[in-house]
Length: 232
Picture 1: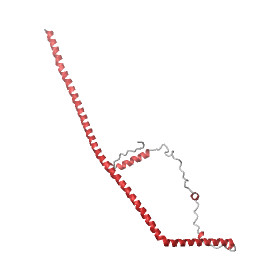
Picture 2 (picture 1 turned 120 degrees about the vertical axis):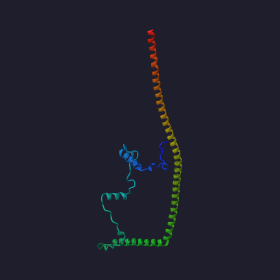
Picture 3 (picture 1 turned 30 degrees about the vertical axis):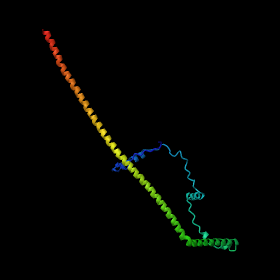
Picture 4 (picture 1 turned 60 degrees about the vertical axis):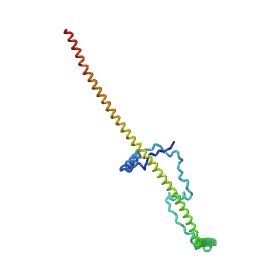
């Protein structure tokens, strides 16, 4: 299948990774490959350009401009909590006194709201906090149950992997032993074949020598018989 990844690591039966120097050698190979690797194309060409201003509001843009211009941040204004009277130049100005009265009424209403919130907190704060803690405890218990389920799933997967890899490991050991035996037998057969070929060559060489030795007296006997006939 396309995109299928074949994992050939068996960490439950492969213990060669724990030998000294193996980790360092693997890291050295990775560093060497990273050093030699040079990307030949931009792998993000198929993606649209990144929009860095998608979540910028008008306030954030204004703040970014202030930071870019190195303008100091304005200090928190406490004017709304003050009750200043009209200035000396506007003591006889009706509108100035009207603004001062409206400001004092707003401050009074604000303090009345604060007092009401404090009274409500004193009356219902404990029960509200208890209800919040009960809800929080229930959410925490639910999250803990989900966490335990996930841990159990992970443990079951690990046990299954260990069991499968152990069984496969035993089979691999048997196959490896069988392979070693076959390789040893093949080597022994090759050695025997080499020895037989050498023995055959020796026999051929010995036979050829015997033929040559046997043929030489026969020729001499013929020559001696011809010489005897000539003398007669």
